Image (cartoon, rainbow, N blue to C red; front, top):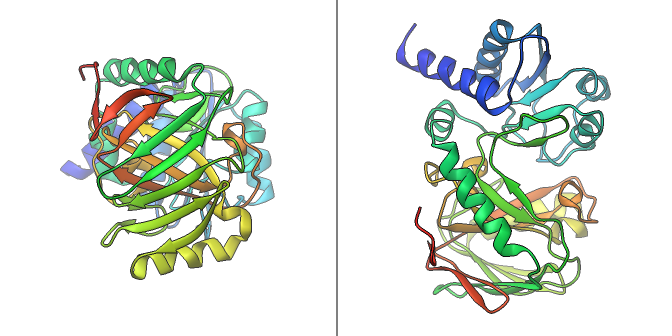
Length: 324
């Protein structure tokens, strides 16, 4: 066994045993595709040694994030104890995942996962991630508006009063829990039609990768109305057009809380990077929103100033009054 294989085996064990809490008397379903087959097989092999039964399913890679798996796979997801999904495109914002969770299935989604990201992010001190994640979640309680500004020109205000606050730590051991692996973020869905301002995406963008030339997104009443920049901005417009008007809706605000995560162009990891925020467009049913569309695209903003109402929480990407 070479070093990469050992790394993958150990990361798979951590993901299943420590993060998902997989038990000897449980059944596991691994859903992967031709692109992430190596990681899927590793999780399946490790699962066989940890639980009663591990089932391996490979589907054709989806075209976009949020696209549903085949109906037979969606049904199978409801009949096991734990589902883990190392796939190229995200299954997080699918009815299949939501319906499995309703049946008390624990689901870990790993869109775009790489061996390197698994090894790095899953080796983090989860107590540290949990502490920061819940600190920020607590700060969000009772907040009416979130405002984000940056030196590059971001200035957007998002109404969030009474919206569900979701602390995502990457530890999913209770029935019906679901989230990304690896994780480390706090997020919520701003009220539809209420966000206004400008977002300068300068970190990375789902479906595009690391940003070469900042993408300027002008948001009016909750929708990305104008998009400016270079070739990557044109590509973003194309991605929006594939799924229709609601793909432009502001769906999510999130703050990364995983200190081991780094900017790689893979949004699963990028949105967890500590010191960044992300604004997503498209589907937000998973987080308690009302936008149903087969697209969810996150845009990463570096070195943000973040205000919860009038309180400065983060200044140029650094936490105010909290040591990490």
